[in-house]
Image (cartoon, rainbow, N blue to C red; front, side, top):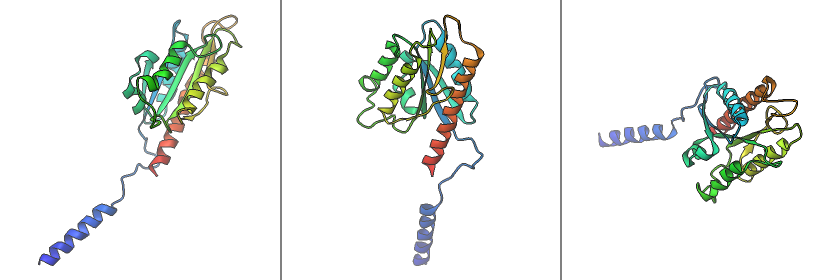
Length: 201
């Protein structure tokens, strides 16, 4: 009797150990979190940010948070699966507020030495007054900060991300530029799903 009970206990324990981990069906939405953050003084970069959010939300399973860079918390940053950062062009580079945001990853949030942003998906967008005002440099410096933290960077809406010209012959932000921002958000969402599904295998 005792031996039978012990045998049943062993069989039950073995079944628990080898039970497969529940997996999502191939067509079932995979939940993921996207943080879209930006600095905007005139409202142009904020308008692009909201279009980026629309694009990200179009991907099934997306939970998207929109915040200004000065409002982002440690929890916002580290619980996100993807991060999209937007900046106006200040002297052919990201604004001081966005640079401070990246500096705070270590100074306030303690991202090192564990590389807590590692393997999260990252992307950038920018607005600038003129056609050739440094928008590409601004996006590249944002992406460089992400690469330094071992993130997986992607583009979308343009070669380095989405951008908009806001002065001169192109006042404000037109529908084509908003469409590029939506495309960036959507692509980040799609790539994030691919990364998360791969990590689950």
